[in-house]
Image 1 (cartoon, rainbow, N blue to C red):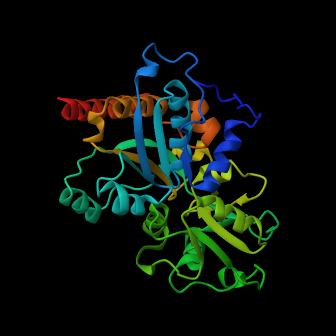
Image 2 (cartoon, rainbow, N blue to C red; image 1 turned 90 degrees about the vertical axis):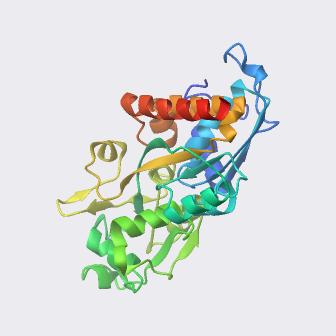
Length: 331
């Protein structure tokens, strides 16, 4: 496996290339990877397509792991798209068109029904822990943190229009919002954790591409946005992350506060869902095993991407679930 400090032929670090991939919202490595340089002895024997859609939050983690896997197995042909958790389930995975669906929240009942209607069986695997991050422009020196109630005022269906409506000492300037589209698991989770029955405003620029949110907030002094921690981690100089006060004082998003449970209510598990039928193909089963193995890789998960790695205990539990599914698929 490549180390977290490896560079490609152009000298671009993988972390920078991940940020670029996040903007593109798709990853196709076929024809641009080098042959394995130390993978297992049968590395060249695995071949075939692996099609993955779903969460933009999980996208950079899945892409980083796939990059290493494809280097070891150059005949594997991966295709990863950032469609949003819900968009991936409803448009691709539950209709039988992809092998995995990434998700930043658990599969929903209506998605379970759609999968069942189409005979798509799956297993749920924990990928990492995220600190959903609220960001503003670095020039927004008037705000360093928000309470959960203030965050609700900004993003609810009938939102505050100017910053001073949220807090008297804030400027009388219009709030410009950038956030996740309604097909996104991040959107669903934000409603669950912050908004509840107040609902989500439609007065914002919605996108499935988290890099677009980052660019929008970076370009407007009075903007605010939210997305997975990895995108802030990859753009720390372009954005300012806000502390969130859930009643015990502001807590800033970080790997440490997400891991400890201190960053509430915006820390959350991330998932990927492999299709059991797809696990019947050896190259897909081997990638699924490799993915679970890498969930404890601190250099990759935390260092390269910016999420909290799984514990050894969680990894063992996920591998057991996966092996049962592979045995079901392959007999």
